[in-house]
Image 1 (cartoon, rainbow, N blue to C red):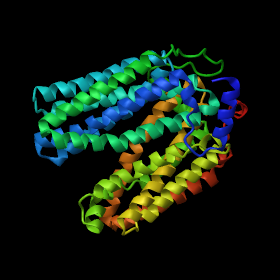
Image 2: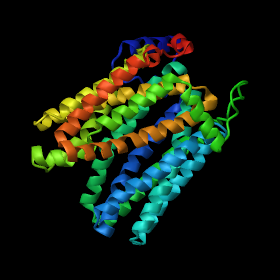
Image 3: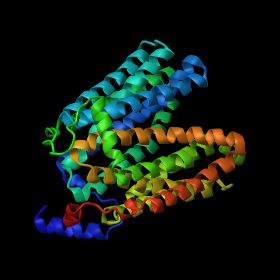
Image 4: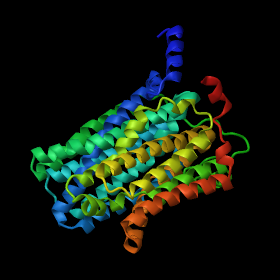
Length: 433
């Protein structure tokens, strides 16, 4: 593409509402985008197959529930450590090593299925190892993006990534369901693990082709990063002094803990819509909204008041979820959940972009580790909150009340601590637009 052609394309993008694909011009990012998208689609096969296999072995939903614990605990621990390590070592090498651990756990799942081991404890161990690999790789992967993508295109790059993974979250389970419809349960589990292992090789390829990404030279006056406990504490100490970042994490926790209605979907689907396929629509609705929101997100990179946009998105999520809790028509509930999903996509993009552009590179890995913990833990705490309050107040009050409460608390936080509302991207981002 010539300079004139590129200028024309940039001008057209500034007027477009369709998803901004300019980051795909960057070869390293394009490879990562393809690798991550394909491998995440493959991971959905494992995410369906593991609980199916666990229930087939134990005939117990309690054992299936333990899979969540097995995945969460390593995520909380290794997410912080992985973030600290990403500030000390070459991020490409760290991503290769942690991806290899994830790949080996997937091969372990495939092997135990082929050998028909039928051990629930082994399944829990393999899920925990897989989660640990993901926890280390995630901060490194996200901290790489600002090193390979121009600052002005970081929101667009994050939008592309979130939209692709959301699409994988919609279509992956559907295709996995087709596999279980074609093959018997045991064979279906084996095929699902094999597909995941095969598609995961694209992520290895993309990471292998990255250039070296060593730590940048230490900045005078800033604590030298380490991969141990001192490094983690240093990152948390830095975070505590940055109100913009603290508030961006706080509004996300509020949104997920107070307004995530996922745990109520089975009960609502049965009581209001007679069960059947209704529960599937409810579980898919938020992801469908996020995917549509991403595909129509060409405006996201043009927003200068990113802090305001983040707060508006969180409030929009809470309000949409709140009204969805009162809906007694399936189409209306799905529509409102989809609106909430679109708002959640916008919120996620701005939270990630603010972190990547606001934080210095020496701290970026550790803060991405905190981000990973918040993103992983918030929805799970939201499930706990929704289920517990539904037992006391009923599902409608738990669902709708949580949504409106999240919107109200987000507004209160933003007004009480206006640093986030005042935030704009750095000056170099403005110059490059």
